[in-house]
Image (cartoon, rainbow, N blue to C red; front, side, top):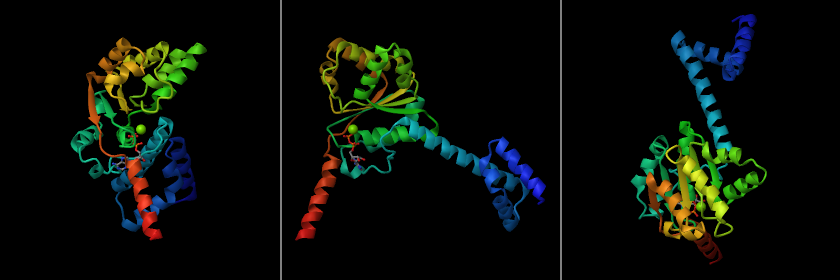
Length: 259
Ligand code: ADP
Ligand code: MG
């Protein structure tokens, strides 16, 4: 291939934002030569690879802006450690039908049982499929909304929590309880704006019956729960803490090493 043509293809590919082709033209051509590839297979290979690389970049970017603490998957979850947990229920949610249906899921249980792990896993799956995801604790969300409200920027800050197609909402690390009335009201605004428009993956170590105390107002708590639970898969995890499992194993290993 003449230098002139390769230079022109590289320039055109770059202008069409096909950076993978621009960078690997020579390698593509030798691969085609080596395997005596036909025209259609050659084009197919170039387009497929470019598309796969773009897709990976989109996912990496979306995961970064989602603010998720990690990107663990359902495959990383050891279901044998939570034998009472309904595997099929979790796997069904993992097919991303929940995001399509704009439905919610709530993971309830004591600390360390894997609530956040599973909520994040479902959000990661949705993100890979193309849904926008945002992760927040209730505590941080309330703090952000309050400070935005104080400087007259509530409307735009609310969008951070209402616009993503999937919102992961962690309610177990609540710093100050109960919420003040206007704080509970901010939460209500987020939940009602998302109602039937976007999914919420909630994790909480508070039973729904305690939400009146959490929000400092029974009526508001009921209004929030009505919207949240209307389309919601509730998954209770009541087994042992996985954090404790790791610690126990470390202690046992130490004892074995010492003995
Ligand atoms: P929770 O949100 O219920 O407090 P996390 O999801 O944060 O618990 O879990 C604590 C840690 O233990 C995380 O690192 C999580 O990945 C891990 N973990 C919890 N349960 C399991 C499990 N069944 N299999 C694998 N890892 C688990
Ligand atoms: Mg958690």
